[in-house]
Length: 126
Image: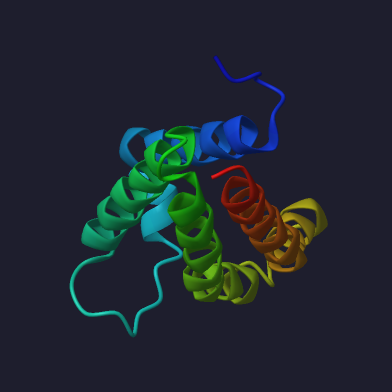
């Protein structure tokens, strides 16, 4: 059984937890779906939540961990436009909210790095 503190288990847990929030509290995600995407924001909220959950499961499985890490890196890049939209939309909010929205932007880089590290570690073991 993998340790809960292992990088892959922690990443899978983060993704799975975030995925659940897409279904439990979708309104917050609907608001940051870029308007340029076709279809309804709710559809994109559910699609991204399902994708996040699928990536978490893929990372949790040792046989697919490398692919899961690569998929997580791609996912973090793909959702970056939503974080940019959030930062723009929240520019007139109080300072703490604005700081949180802006803080999400540089956070994507270490998330991508983490996902690539999980993929690389899996490739070395596999």
